[in-house]
Amino acid sequence: MILLIVLCFLILLLSFLASSMEAALFSVTPIQIEQMCDRGLTGASRLRRNKKAIQESIVAIVILNNLSNIAGSILVGALAIDVFDDVWVGVFSAALTFAIIVFGEVVPKTIAERNAAVYARYTAQFVFVLRIFFKPMIVLINVFARPFGGQADVEHRLSEEEITILARMSHHHGNILETENQLIRRVFELDDLMARDIMTPRTVVFALRGNDRLDSVANDLYKAAVSRIPIYGEDLDDILGLAHIRELLAGMAKGKGHKLLRDFAEEVSFVPDTARLNVLLTDFQKNREHLSIVVDEHGGMAGVITLEDILEQLVGEIVDEHDSDVDLRVKARLLKEMRRKGLE
Image (tube, rainbow, N blue to C red; front, side, top):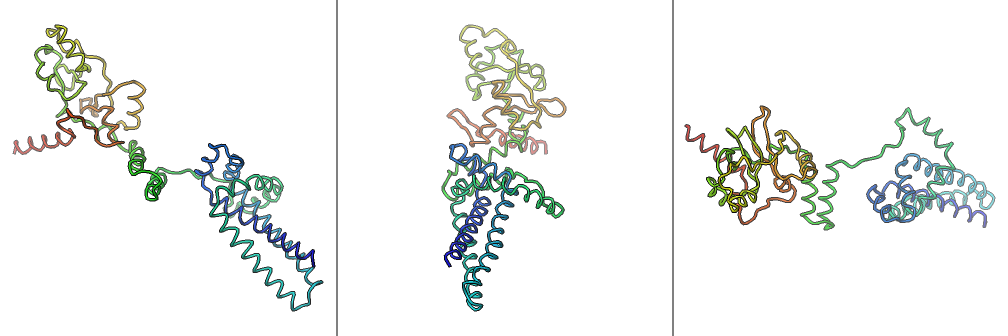
């Protein structure tokens, strides 16, 4: 009788362990695993290996679960026949089946799912041992399962859409701020936008002719709301360079008003209007630039784009006390519409 009780307890224990490990391994997320690895928690790195080889890990757990249930039930049945008569054997078998369902399946899976990260980490070493111990059986099972879709483990990688959804859900649950949620979403939008989508159109670009004297544009400089000014030759399609308003004002203060604006022009970069914003942001940082000239497919000057324009796509409009026009693209459209009506 004692042997029968011990064997039933062992069956329930192994079934409990197998079911809970399976549920925990399925429930723990790659993000949780990486967080635990970053914190250096015991078993986290082993858990990461088990998760990456999740098919092999699950097969090992299933083998343990079935061996304990099937082999254990056979042994328990044989012992029960010696202990009970025919009627009580049936009652005992039904009771054991019910106990396995409740305490070997439902209860352990519920507990493991609610504490997936901790439970999976603590049992990671045991799962790894099972993978080694049952390796021959795992290989054999995979051979038979391959024609039915049993392939090697495929690591799931979060897409941009999934990360955006996770950020929105985290905001709804109060884990991150709305500004953080918006920032994450806007970061993924950078590679979907091109320079022509956010550039300042040429119709509203503040630029100066290179052959003009510095003192002849003094009033324009005093009223300028920009810090970097394109300098052009015959027309805007002939950009000579870029002048910093600080250098121009300093030149006037030093008595250099007689000099031509082209003398103050420094090298400026040109980018196609199809350039992606994420690429432009990297180029601005690498080259330590703040403004580039945008050219169209014909090589003509289409507008200008600044580092601030790109940053505004992430954090919203950046406006200071000197900005009279918040969105120059809107102003350009209004000017175009006014010209069209004037022609009509």
